[in-house]
Image (cartoon, rainbow, N blue to C red; front, side, top):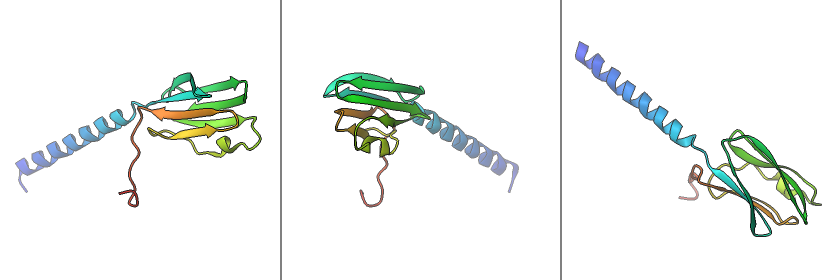
Length: 120
């Protein structure tokens, strides 16, 4: 290998590193979650800002926690607590639903869901 070969390898490596950094920055833009109660918008919150939101309505109380760019229903005073057992959401279109309290949390403008082998 000659001196120019090493220069070419170095330049290609540098371009690859710059591309990886750019991809990481694009993916960190984060999205938002929309909270609706009984079909009416309760609030919109950024996934990039950690927060604890108490959702109070005539149907009951829920606590939504946004941390590490993910949203999770932390508490609910409904009888079955199925919403509390749902996983954290962070991809566009993912939802958490509390049927007894008529609360729906939906992620918008975030990273897209990745297709798995079965979905293709």
